[in-house]
Length: 195
Image 1 (cartoon, rainbow, N blue to C red):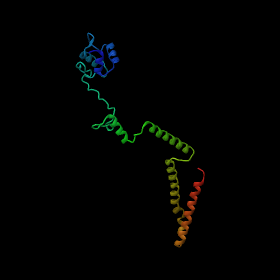
Image 2: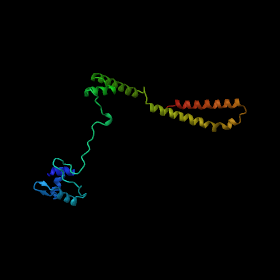
Image 3: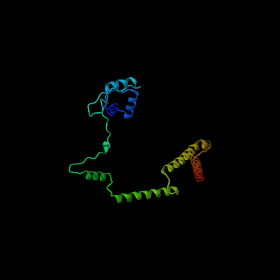
């Protein structure tokens, strides 16, 4: 076996085998590498030892190592089955129509240009303050609701002593109405102040 085949047998580069040769870790029988004797020296001198490999029959340079697993180019879920009586071109067209991509080049270019124009318009509107992000609006509304909740929950503690002194239901109702209107006006004034 030559040095290239020996490198393939061990799964290393030819440069590595050349280094082994320079270190005296390879045994030669003429121009060929003696696999068994070289493996014994590798096992003796290499830090990690040597994998147990055997000389492969001619034409097979893998030895007793498993053949490498070939990776698929197309994922299994993206495979296209060519139906009976269908050519590859018609199968591709069928897939394109099913996924909504039946446009020709000019139509696709027009759609792309429209998309880019709408995107530029949206960016301009956002920069001009004509549109805002939904997340920003949701956060602002949430903050306002938190203020309202806090203010309304504070009412009983603030006004219970005053309400206790009232004698009729009408007096309690009028006092509560006045307190709620006052709280809502206070919250409205807070919203008008510059942030």
